[in-house]
Image (cartoon, rainbow, N blue to C red):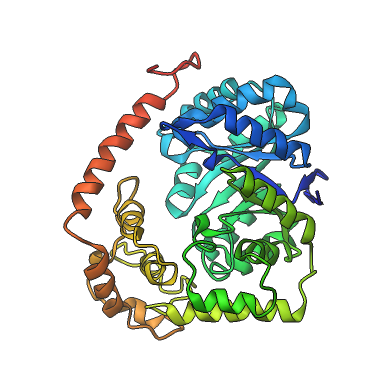
Length: 410
């Protein structure tokens, strides 16, 4: 296993980290026997970082990891978990949630602690509840060792967040299709220039970069090396970046783990040849040619006076055709429908034209949003959003910790 150091701490972390969001599941619950075997094999191969979060697997992930770590693996790995903005309704919730996490993980100190899923809304909420001083106090009390955040906002906000606190690390979505989306390459390099380690999530875009690939993409990869899988191409390209410290991968099968371990062994920093990089560039060009809307996710059109998240609307719409993801309508409804935040879907557009002044691609944004609306916003959307709101409310009531660290329900 290769290791790269977290500059702010000196910790050597494996370039492949284990993502706990996708532990194997049986009958709606974590398959603990299978997940345990996968984690054991990963650790034996040198993986020393496990990432989880408060709501992964409906709260089961932290509990499972607590059981796993207490069986003799605590000293072999760094454990990471996250403060969920959706469960913070007042300042005192920060302490209640954190103590619940400590209890579930069965640890005295959390090695890497993150603010979860920062965007403009969640960043404002965390600031309103003085979360940064809260993190500083936890670090002084030696309850957390290192402080970071995971991110799903725009590049301007990313830089603002990086400059707001002495972070040790951050976690961003980055892959061959997201070089210009969210934090993007610009954000990655900005964080690295500030000495902030960058951990990458969604390196395969949830598997969409390795399944149901357009034939043109498969052909482009095979022109260089017919034996190299699309997964290895995608991971190798990310590891090639000097600013990347680690890739997090959710590995649900033994074959996923064995493949990724091999790819990590064969990859490295600045190891890709000019010819290899040209192959990746051609693959990206193919994907771009398949886009319905030539949006690069630059965010210059934002914010919309009426709340439309235009880049995300176009990203999800494009994904239907780029990645053969016919289930993308459901993601659109859940992510943009306001079930867990403010609505930001395409039909909120009032055709004011403000965005047209700022788009460097000269996209007729209101016109394209009408196409997104027609395709993505079916009559089922609003009932699904309403039902999701009810389920999320019930989940929050169930998961909300009491002051004694117990849960409201069992």
